[in-house]
Amino acid sequence: MSGRDGGQTTTGRVRRTHPTRLTHPTRLTHRPRLTRTEARNARAAAAFVLPFLTLFLLCFIAPIGYAVHQSLHRTERTGPLGLGGREREVFAGLANYAHALADDRFLTGFGRVLLFGVVQIPLMIALATVLALLLESASARGVTFFRSAFFLPYGVPGVIASILWGFLYVPGISPLVEIAGSLGWHVDFLARDTVLWSIANIVLWQFTGYNMLVLISQLKAVPEELYEAARIDGANAWHIARHIKIPLIRPALVLTTVFSIIGTLQLFAEPMVLRPLAATIDSGFTPNLHAYSEAFVSNNQHVAAAEAVLLALVACVLSFGFLRLVGQRGEGSVR
Image (cartoon, rainbow, N blue to C red; front, side, top):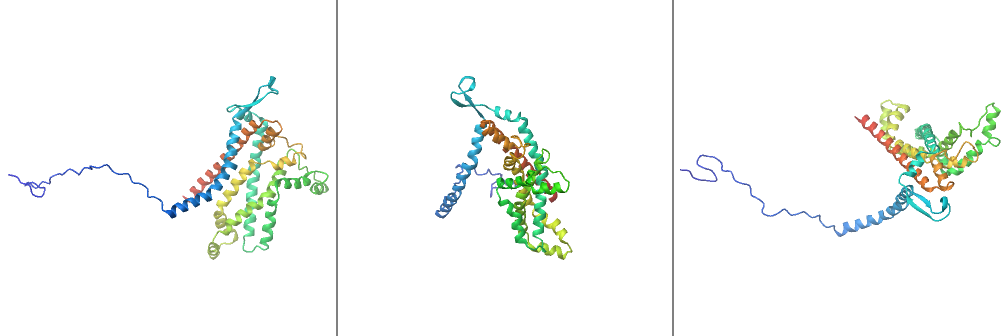
């Protein structure tokens, strides 16, 4: 005879019980309502952000969208032989991009600015780094004067800087050419083989001080205790610069390099101003100059828009490619 006591049989075995089943469906949890203070803060934040978003959409997103729209259309004229009559825009697909990529002068201009950047950007960043390290050294004197003097060319507009250097490049009125001639050197700054590097000199003169100031601002954020600890360990000025300062200003170096890459691809003012002085500078000397000529000389704004979009894509690819390369190297050094 078996009995039950406390859920157990007389044999000592534990009786299994079924878990209690839910008889009501689970209720969805609702987010708590914002308090009056939180809602007021959210509205205030939106009010501060709204002007920036408005200007960002109008001055950045809208022009890009319009350029893409223009690059995908072409102008069609209804008159005989395509002359006269009414004009209308029709969808052209990628025909404008194909036309731009088939233009040898446009592609040659791309190759020219890439060569320009490969030589000019490392030279400018290296010079800016040296100047920043010299002005931030403990023994530097006249720091305020030299910092202002090196930064002053950046305040000169690119057109004015090109005009000033143009007078120094033209034979007959250039003191540099006369001095070189008196020494027996024949120098032609506007020749086919040298005009690109004459433009590089203008860009170097104008933007080195700006990059130097960015690096100096990063150096000022380095704690002074690191320098003192390094000196106590016996490090000299070279060791401090190589192992402390340069690694710690790496973000600023990356930033200035990216800005320089974008600026190189946008090269326009310098060759445009020097073009009347140098017959070697044609309408396809740089991609920007070629797009300008297509839009305002050849009256083909759709092809110019396609070239502008291609130029923007190349700038994005090079910039993000450089950032990715630097990021991978940074992760490798940490490991």
